[in-house]
Image 1: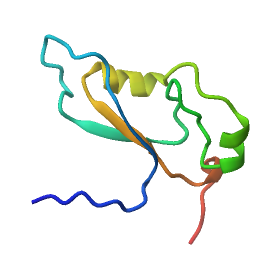
Image 2 (image 1 turned 45 degrees about the vertical axis):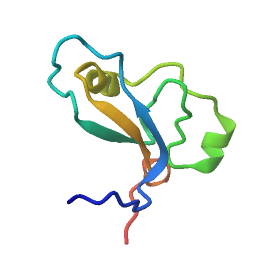
Image 3 (image 1 turned 90 degrees about the vertical axis):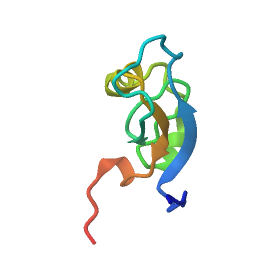
Image 4 (image 1 turned 30 degrees about the vertical axis):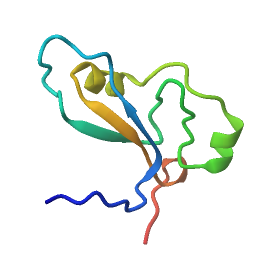
Length: 91
């Protein structure tokens, strides 16, 4: 049995999918999440930085890589946390 646990990976959850197709699509039934560096139309891309997110408006289009997955039938479950401004952090 798979348990649904929240490990704090998501900074914003949603369920985004294109209109259902009459045909079986290759990624139908699969889900994915994107880092907060990918634009999703209607959502602010904050690059892991709350100040950036607070001072910028929502994206007006969706990143091509995300659109490719959606077009193939997958569902985007949200945006996940990331290192601020995509900088690498050493432990």
